[in-house]
Length: 104
Image (cartoon, rainbow, N blue to C red; front, side, top):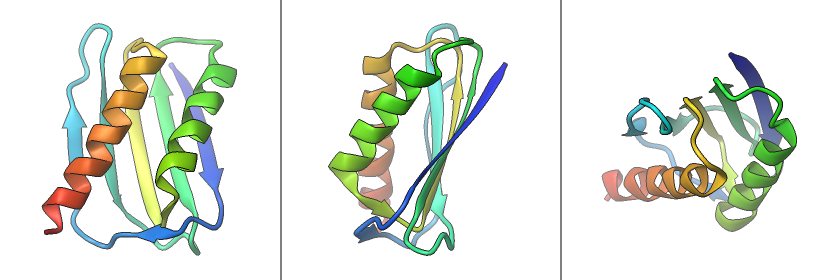
């Protein structure tokens, strides 16, 4: 397993509500847990992945995700079993959308 941590500063979208879990860890998939955290307008994303040596790809996917959502004071935990970048991006978007919907 490889552990990666990404932090993005100065997010614009603060959402304070209960944590939300999306996805299921199984062959070729991943789960995403998203929730509030006091991060001084930052967003932290931790990744536990079975696919070793892909940190530059993870970095690119996380940067793209944060540029779209601009999250602030949010912590995201990802447990991955080899999902493709497209699946990772889709699951992250689903997690934020579920998180936003849960707060309505």
